[in-house]
Length: 340
Image 1 (tube, helix red, strand yellow):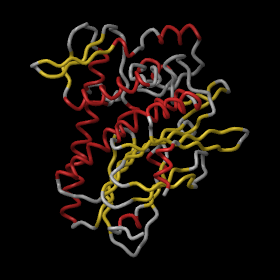
Image 2 (cartoon, rainbow, N blue to C red):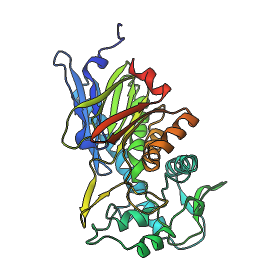
Image 3 (cartoon, rainbow, N blue to C red):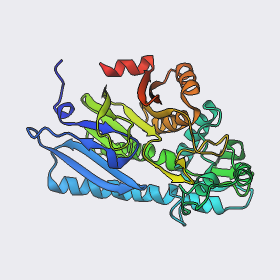
Image 4 (tube, rainbow, N blue to C red):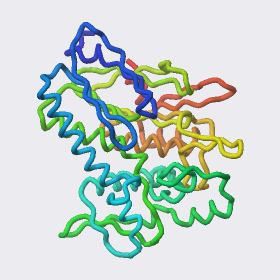
């Protein structure tokens, strides 16, 4: 097969659920530009055909500026961010939000409903309790009483988006409920960078933010990393063109507390870190934000429920489970077409 451009040759991404594990294999025969920066606790990268130095600096400047603005909206680590202010808001009144916030929360509510609450952005209190938010890692395992008490401060039904002539507004009917958008930030950032590049009339590129990737132009070769800590090998390779892929996993971000493994992915239904054998979920979609939302929600559900939802929604998905120290892979009919 003859590819239309050379980018598919030089862009081979090893994709995982954290930006620090993204790897690029380079063919030295071709020149290209790599632009990088930091956002939302990880790194962002844009790879495109060779650009002049002035153009590269200009692109980096406008991308970083936009991502810094996004972080000021979505980050729970920033005390003056829109999310942090909303989380402190005790009134049962309309809270003004912008179009970007409306978009990310709408996607979260939609996919949250489709996953029966497995994706739940209202678990901010639970995230903090387990030490994955703005608060420090706990010194002891939370009691069942504390977990159940915190569970009462969650639930998508307590959140509502309202639009009127004055704009978009967010409303909560539970004053101590807290939103956490960290699971969706990477996908949103990728889509926002793509918007910038499109406005600059750049038509062939690849964007990565953490475990979320978007490709445009020629066919790109993307590798999903083997979901085993400290094993830097490729598990599956897919071929994408004008598509996004996002991967979520439970094998890198965790710690041990009282000899128990505490994973960063919290089940909103139990209030506990997930414990099942589904260790990696990859979703291919047209929109990176949606792919990012789906992979997190499906990671929470476990293999059987995830498979059922994938078939029902006709998702382009790859699930990897660990059974008897062996990796077993299941792919949806839609995902199979991306392997060729």
